[in-house]
Each structure stands twice: as structure tokens, then as C-alpha cells.
Amino acid sequence: MFIVVVFVCKQLSHAGQDIASGIILAEHLQRFQHVTFAAFFLIYVVVGLVTEHFPTILPLPQGTVHATFALGFLMELVVFHFGHHPGTDLESFVHMLMQLILVCLVTFMFLEILWPRSILIAVARCMVLLMKGTWFFQIGLLINVPYHIPLGCSIGENDDYPLCATKQAEMRAKSLQVLIFGWQAVAIVLGTFIGYACMLHYSHYFSSRPTIIIPGVTTPRFKDQQVYFVVPEVGDKEDHDSGESDGGDLDADGTPIITDSSTTMSRRLSSRNHVLSTDIV
Image 1 (spheres, rainbow, N blue to C red):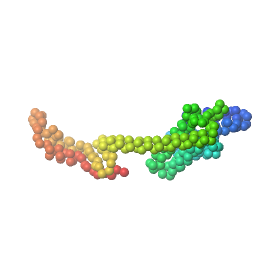
Image 2: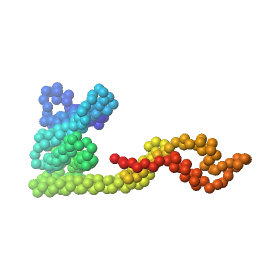
Image 3: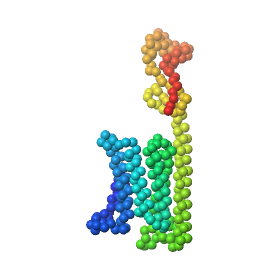
Image 4: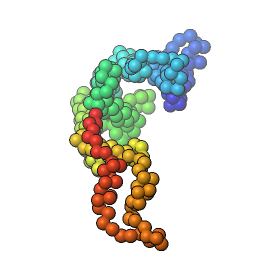
């Protein structure tokens, strides 16, 4: 929430000047557009906090908060497509690639509302969201770092983004951005599979150890296994009165008499433990 508020305040730093003049200057229009879709993210944060900590104040249907989050990305898509970066230059091209990411992101987020328990949709949404962040990073390098400007293009003193001298240089620069876009997508897909393999490996490692739920009760992590319920030792007093103990009988001096206790232990264990088969969903 702090990050969103700082972003909105920074974008509205010129608002006093525009309100005083009664005119929104052309160079300030993009900032107002940024504030427009950032307002959805601010609403999402506030509503999410209220519904989480005070659910009785604002009871909402399932998926409402998630839909508000998706509307922020949808408004960002509308701003990028219609009013933010029109044209065919290099900056417009990299933001056009961002629009493809936003289309996929909004689609997966609304599908996640319909199928909230689908792990595939959730993972796909995370992958696209990660792609959005890495591509924004690439756009920042292209605009602000001279070393990352393609050959044949440059940023003038009065320019905010690179301009290419020739059509051939512009075409090469666009092709290079498509190549970087594809490399980032491949890296994210590969990283997702590697992360899944690592999680699967460690889950198998830890699954060999039973999980303690309550004292004396353990449950397995896979089906077709057995659960051992330890019955409280109610019969200890009776065993003591009958002269049986885990260490054997005692003589007159209190010294344990060593005897063959296999039968006694077998009977005690069978009376204390019950083996039940269970199905884990």
C-alpha cells in the first residue's frame, strides 16, 4: 500500500499547477493515466485489508477482491493501448509487447475467479506476472541506460525515449526486443519447471517422516498407508496389581526378576495399539 501511495503522489506532483491553470498539459497526461489505473490497485489494497481484518464490516462475495485487482491490470491495458504509447516507434513497440502480457494476465486472473482451486491457472498467472515485471525492467533499461540502446538509435537531449536514425535501424531494434522478450519467457518457463522439480524432490524427502497432529497420533502423507493410534495406558494400574511390569516381576528385596517377557509385551502392545487403515484426500 505504501508503494502505491508513493507512486500516486509522485505522479500527481504537478496536479496543483494544472488545477491552478485549469488545463492539463500534454506532458502531464501520461501521469494522470498512470494515476487512473493505480487507483484500482489502491482500492484493491484498502478493500483487501478491510475484508481480511474486519470481515463483518464489508462482507463481499468470493472473488470480488481478486476481480478488483484484475480490473487494475485491465485499465492499464486500456491506457497502454489507446492513450499512452500510440505510434510505431521503438518505445511504442516495447509497450505493445507489454500489452500482450497484460492480455494474458487479465485472462488468467478472471479464469482464476471461476476456478479458484486450479493450480495450473494460478501458476500461469504467477508466470505472466513475473514476465510483466521483468519486461518493465527491460523497458527501463532501454529508456534510461545508454548502454542498452540498440545500434543506430539514440536519445536526444529533448527526447524521453530512443529514436532510430533509419528504418533499417528501427527494424533491427524491434527484432532485438522480440528476441529479448522470447529469452525472458523461456527463462521463466524453465525456472518454473526447475522450481517444481525441487519442490517435488524435497516434498518426497520430508514425506518419509510422519507428521505429528496430536500426541500419540501420526498420519502419513500418501495413500494406502496405515495410521497408528496409541491408546492411553489405562491398563497400567491393572498390570501393576497383577504383578506384571515392563521390567518383569520383583522379588522380596525389590530386585527385578528377569524372565521371558515376549508374551507379556505382545499382549500389552496389542491391547494399547490399534492399526487402522485410512484414506487421505
